[in-house]
Image (tube, rainbow, N blue to C red; front, side, top):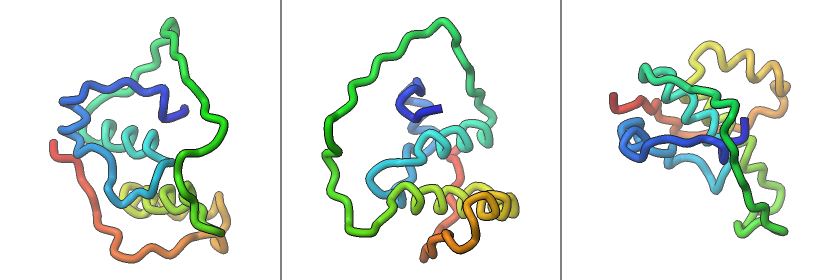
Length: 112
């Protein structure tokens, strides 16, 4: 599910610790919030009759470094922080040669 399609109460978002400050620009927030919600005893609900609108930009407003894959870096951080021994399944899926080295990945836990 695309991250832009989530709705969350701001008080619960703060209780979960908001977004991971170690993420760059964007990408993976939807998975991070899903893991935090699940591991803190919350629920993710699919509301089939809801309607969502999204405005797409013609170009990204963010500056990207040359040869930088921000999304992949964020997803590797997500795996390192939340998946414990299950991260190996993720790395098998993307191929070990594509794993990005991260320094100082701190375990982040929900504040609940």
